[in-house]
View (tube, rainbow, N blue to C red):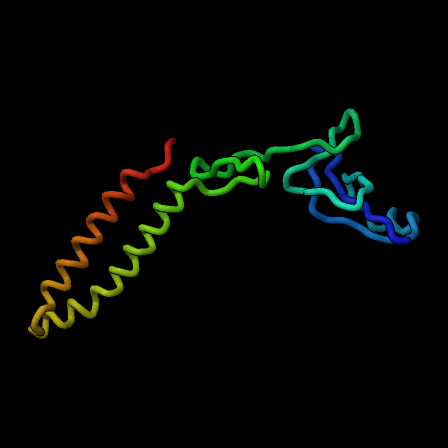
Length: 141
């Protein structure tokens, strides 16, 4: 029967995300990275667990916050973008799409097509609202 070992850093207790599975423990020695220990378990979550270096037990772990735009989701045990950050990203993507649409409207305006100025103004008005929303949603810090 195969056994599973998970590698962790001996200095921090953080799992590396690498594991080794074999039926013979003797093969483990040849596959152990320098500076790492092993924890035998069928499954661990290397992103939200670590080895307590004193007790040798696996404990919950919350990694550092990636940015001020992230908030901890306790049920998923992961950092995720806040709703404000997601809204800001979506607004910026919409602005990019609207800016790309301006090119055709500008060409039509330069050629004197009817309604081109109104289309340009509508694009500009929508972008102004989105830019205001983005500036109000800046991340703290």
